[in-house]
Image 1 (cartoon, one colour):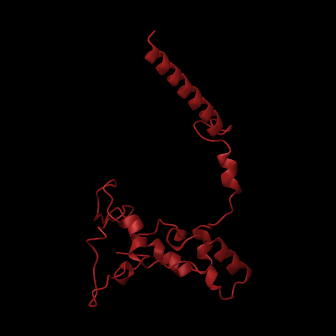
Image 2 (cartoon, helix red, strand yellow):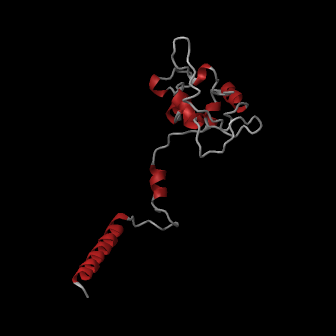
Image 3 (cartoon, rainbow, N blue to C red):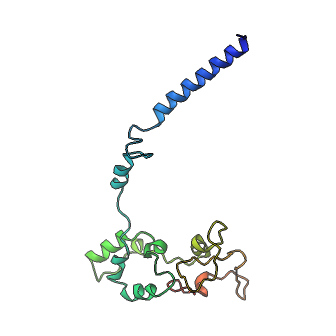
Length: 169
């Protein structure tokens, strides 16, 4: 056998051995317990602190807003999708029902174009409906760069200047 082939076989053997050692070291022991997943990931996720509460918590104090949103195009969205995690907000409000919330517990009221663009910016991978008035479950897509309206001072308008977020159309 020629010397260069012998060296190549040795190099391949070393690379394969190195790969197997690295694979053994890098793959967690619980991998594969539940199919192609890491079994301990369930315990790891369960150990994380809770942050979200769900729409049922919002109804306690914001019943009129939740009812209004339920008739709008964003009816299927959880309040926390736009306003952020609300567990601390709700817990504080439940313990001191008539107290004013501290600023640190106030939820976001997103007003910037980037917030709406997270869902509504045109995405070529999505279904191509953009003006479906029958099926409100479809996300209306807008090219945020082209739909960039400006006011008389030549400043970009915010989406909420024209569209009400709880019923945006």
